[in-house]
Amino acid sequence: MPSDFTIQSTLHAGIIMDGNGRWAVARGRPRTAGHRAGAETVTRVVEAAPDLGIGVLTLFAFSSDNWRRSPEEVGSLMALMAEYMERETARSVENGVRVQAIGRRDRLDPGLREAIARTEAATAGGTRLWLRLAVDYSGRDAILRAARSLLDPSRESVEAALGPPVDLLIRTGGERRLSDFLLWECAYAELVFSRRMWPDFDAADLAGAVREFRGRERRFGAAPPEPVRAVAGWLD
Ligand code: FPP
Image (cartoon, rainbow, N blue to C red; front, side):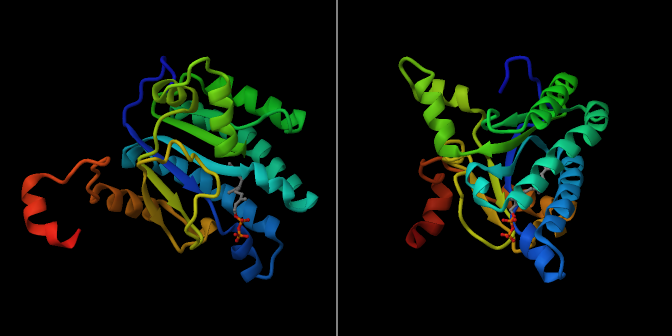
């Protein structure tokens, strides 16, 4: 967490926003229409997150492996992200949302790079929600970069270079894999998989995932407390 960042809530949720393409194809529309609808879901989810106790939200917008998609699809995703930055900056400032991109920037087109820089600068004072958009992002590469930047890497220094640990990891679209997203940060994340395609995901779904998270017992490798062990021990 940046040293100057005071958040009102501490839950870090990461979301793999999957299912845009299938959502569109099921409606006889091009995959790019699914991404456009998915960008609208981003706006809804960002709006809902703080009231659910989410202080940090990391969204997987474009994986470093997504460059393998058609130039048309890649172009449309890049344009949607630039559009999002332009459209949402004023609202983010108003709502106390600090927007930051994580991932490589050197392969993004200059227009998007500049849009990101403008939004980051304009929203830097936000303390209600820290929104991290993973763009040209690979968890493995992020770990490598962090380790290479440190003389004597330790758990603490790598964590400081990468960002806060994820508490709740949500993946929509019915698949159940991490796809190179926040690999280190998800070491003890609670995983929630939703069958909902991302364009259909809404505030109620997010609230449901947070509810499920709150009902989980997080032990971080420790043994359960005595009374629980006595009752449920034979189940382990
Ligand atoms: C995965 O669905 C989704 C993506 C690769 C892109 C996610 C992008 C957005 C939600 C919109 C742009 C982002 C912002 C921040 C404005 P998929 O296409 O792999 O779906 P499929 O598995 O059904 O094919």
